[in-house]
Image 1: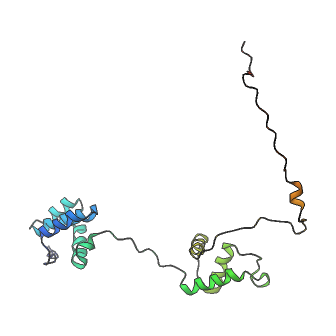
Image 2: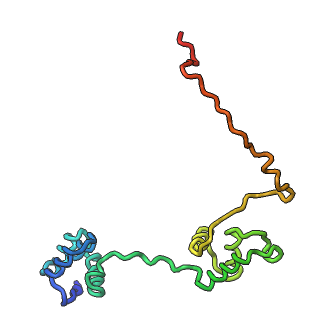
Image 3: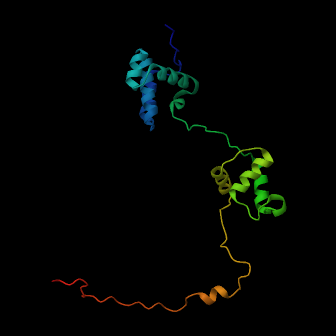
Length: 183
């Protein structure tokens, strides 16, 4: 059987219990109290039962506690994947959106997100999904806007001529009239 990893000598059971009393993070409190059992001379199996975990988890807690102290027992946010676009890529994307597409070069008359994804792939060989690029553009201050389609030969005053400008006349329903005969 291997020798257990020793705990830091600069803490003791009473100190961990005091820190646990002051903490507002329930998971950190549970971990601190389980390690306090070890400081009191209890077996790690007892600490695992006290914490409601396995021996391997108690070992992980000891490693985190030894490395970072009581703050190491607080759950951290998972780092996730690094962003695919760098600041250089974002600057080029902003320039491309601001300048607009050149129909002869880019093959489109207005940028769609899928077109920008294709441009990022062709320019930098980075595969970016539509959702990711949309999120990046929103973070850069852009919103997805689309103009209402208008026919190129539409007359300027044609829309106003067809608008209904008169007041609608509402009729009151006849109250008290039963539509189904009561026979």
